[in-house]
Length: 351
Image 1 (cartoon, rainbow, N blue to C red):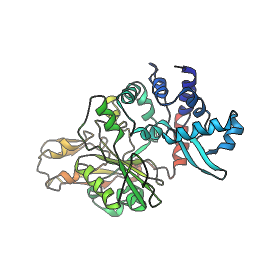
Image 2 (image 1 turned 90 degrees about the horizontal axis):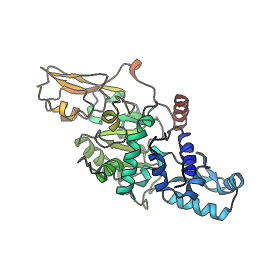
Image 3 (image 1 turned 180 degrees about the horizontal axis):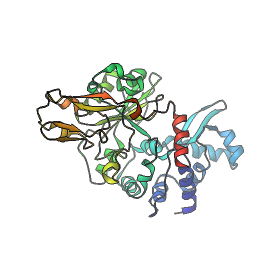
Image 4 (image 1 turned 90 degrees about the vertical axis):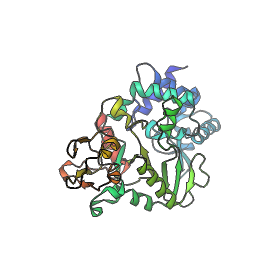
C-alpha cells in the first residue's frame, strides 16, 4: 500500500468540517485503500468540497483530461465523490467520510469493509463525534409532544416528510455493518429514509427503493414502534434524510456506550415529563429508553440531563403518564440554519 497517497487523502478529508481523524494503528489508511485505488486517491485528494467542472479541474491539476474524466466518473458512480452540475457542465467535488461517501457504500458493504470500518471506529471515531455542532440532531416521535403548536417545522418529522416531493428507503448501513462483524442488533433494517424536492428523483436510484409519502410515514411508525430514534442533519434547512437510530448499532449513538459520551447527537428541544398521578410504575418506559434517562421508584423519574427528547418511551406508556414538553429557551442550543452555517461553526470548533 502506498501510504503517502492515502495519507494525503486522509489529510484532505480531515480538513473538511466533518473531519476524518487519523488512527494510530493505521486503520484509516487501510479503509481508504480498500475503497480507492492509488490513482483514485491521488485525484480525490486534490478535489475541492465545492463543485468544479472538468475544465476547471484540468486547468488546476493538469494531466490527461480524458483519463481524469474517466476516473472522476467512476468515483462518482461508486458514490465516493459528489457529482453535480456547474455552469460549465458536469462538476465533481470531494465528499466527506461521514455523513458522506461511507453511507453510499451500503449496497457494496461486505465483511471486509465492515471489519475495516469497525477497526477505524474503535480507534478514531470518538474524535469525530466529540466536536460540536454535532452532525446529527434528534427529532421527537411526533405523538409524544404535549403541545404540537410548540414545534418548529425543522423539529417535526411530519413537516420534513411533507416538504419533499420524492421519497425512498434503504437499508441502515450501521445495522448492516454490525451484522457483518457478527453483532446483529435485531432492529428493522430497511428504515433509512431519503427525500428529494424533485418528483421521481429515486426512480432509478440503485440501492434506494422509491416509495410514496404514505409509505415513508409507515416507515417512521415502524421505527417508532421498534424503539428507534429519529435523527436528521443538524440544520434547519436541507433536511433530506431521516435516520432511525439505535444505541446498539448507530455509528453516533454507539459512542454513548463505547466511549462514555453522553450527547453524541444534538438533543431535541424537548424533555420528558411524568404525570405522577397517572404513572402506575410498570417500568415499561425504563426498559424502552435508549439513553438510560429514566429510573423507577414509586413513580418514574426523569434525568433531564440524560434525556435527549426523542419521545420513544411516550407512546409505549400504558397509562399515558409521559409527554414531551419544550425545554426553557436557555437550555436549547440553536440549530444552524444552513449546511454552510453548520460547516463554519464546526470548523471554528475544530480549530
